[in-house]
Structure formats: structure tokens, C-alpha cells
Length: 253
Image (spheres, rainbow, N blue to C red):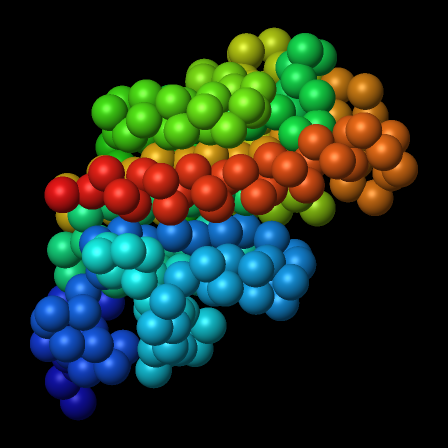
């Protein structure tokens, strides 16, 4: 019997639009993804800041507007989910992919609530390697600069530098942390390389803004207690990354 394999890369534009329940005129300008366990809470907060919100025919992907810009938002936790959303909409021709979320700080000068904007991201997520040559992917430098400006206008502490995306925080080891620390990487999380690499394959710029939660150099993980001031900084920055993402949306042309 003859076989006829077909890759997801061969799905046509018309098929994606039909599957998503989108018209050509509704293709988003910007895609914003957030990696978080707190899906219901974050999703409610984020969608409340958009208008004309509706869930698309693919579940947990929401379309809305911010001013005159069309926005897709998705709580995309981990590389396998992030790549789906980034690839679909980059292939359709969105203009910018933004990844937000939280991360573990790999350098001792980082504190909860600090903001990391990765410029060069090491791909250890198991997915980005299929979209780029080599073991790193670069965030778009123009959008990195704009993201930094947007966050600093919100009075946040911002660090731009190298970062690593890994496949699962449960599989991270002390030896990994020590190696990443020695290599000068600022932080680690689970989606940024994936989202940016998939977008880049289709010529779409991408940028990430992630909030330091875990103080890995001090052995403090997300389940460990935080001071009231640190918790306040963390929550303020979690709000700031979405505000900055909306600000970047306004700059898209």
C-alpha cells in the first residue's frame, strides 16, 4: 500500500484560516504568549485588557483588539505548546511574536521582579533546534531595544543579555545551573527560544520579556517563601510585562 506522509509545514494558509475560524482580514498584527501554571488567573487578567475578545476554533487561543491592532493571546506553557501558536500565526503573516512569563535567575545580582530581555537565547528546549541552525537564536534587536524602553518607562529593573530555554524545570539539575551560571547566562525558562525560533523561520521578528521569580544562585525556588517586598516586586513586574507587550503592539506597522 502506498503511503503519503504530509508535514504540518505543508498545511496551507487556507487550511489554517479555516481551522482557526479566522478571515484574512482578522490575521493578527501581534501574537502574545505567556508561559505560566496560573492559566485561568493570568488569562482572565490579560483578556480583560483587550476588546472584542473571542476564542478561536482551536482551543485556548483568543483573538481581540488593542486599539486599532489585532492581537492573539494564548497561555502557552512549555515549548511544545509555544511552537504551535508561534508557527501558525507567523506562517499566516503576523508582524510580531512576543513571549512573556517568568524565569529563574542564574546570576546573583538578580532579584525577584527583575526583568530579563534575552538577546541571544541558547536552545535547550528540544524544539527550537528544528527551526534554526546552530544552538542559539537571536531576539530581534529593534524589538529588544523597544521592549527595554517600554519596561523602563514603567520603572522596572531591566537586564538585557544571554538566556537559556530548557525543556522542563523539573528536569533541571544543580550541574546545569552551575554550567549556565559560569557561562554568564542571565536566566532560564521554557518558551522564549521556541517562540522566537518558530517565528524567525517565517521571517517574523520575536522578543521575550520574562520576570525573575526563582533566585537559583541562592537556592530559592518558586515554592519557597518570599519577603512581602519581593512578592510585591514580582507581581508588579508580572503586570508590567503585559503592559509593555501592549505598548509594543502599538508600535507595529
